[in-house]
Length: 232
Image 1 (tube, rainbow, N blue to C red):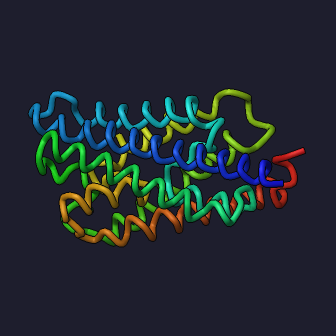
Image 2 (cartoon, rainbow, N blue to C red):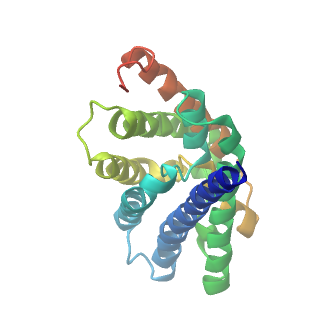
Image 3 (spheres, rainbow, N blue to C red):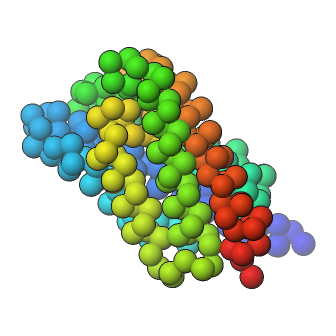
């Protein structure tokens, strides 16, 4: 019995570590690209930054998805939980690992570059939080719909989830990144806000992604007949 309990804790720890590492890599590469683009006076370009975000997400899904499920995003974790595909006792540890991984990345970036470009903080264009709230909700809705459809639904082509999700992140960042920052991820927004101490309308980067992801769960629940057509 004790041996079985230790094994369960060990497996759980590896999943948590994978979420920490994955979110660290996402924020380090993604917001690092924002910083380098600023330092290099636009050498990376907006499309380049968008590509980095999409590419790192795709790479992480293929490298760590089989360990932790590759959430790397509190909104995704909460959506998986509300859809019944994720156990309640792992929600808080996952979110804490994601936030700590993201903050660690932002700390290393500020040690390397200083507070440049607000460390890639997500900010509403011209302070228009209403616009950004709507857009972040829609962007995360689309992202979560793709995650459910390509990553969890058994009817989807096997092996393409990383490409589909990475492309979605990259395309949405290219499309709306200059308006909202295209966060779609509370941990990604929290870390640079904390380390650069820029909290302008930060609340929306928690509420909008979580709302958008939950709406996607409701829609996909209907599309998959209460998720019955997704498994088995």
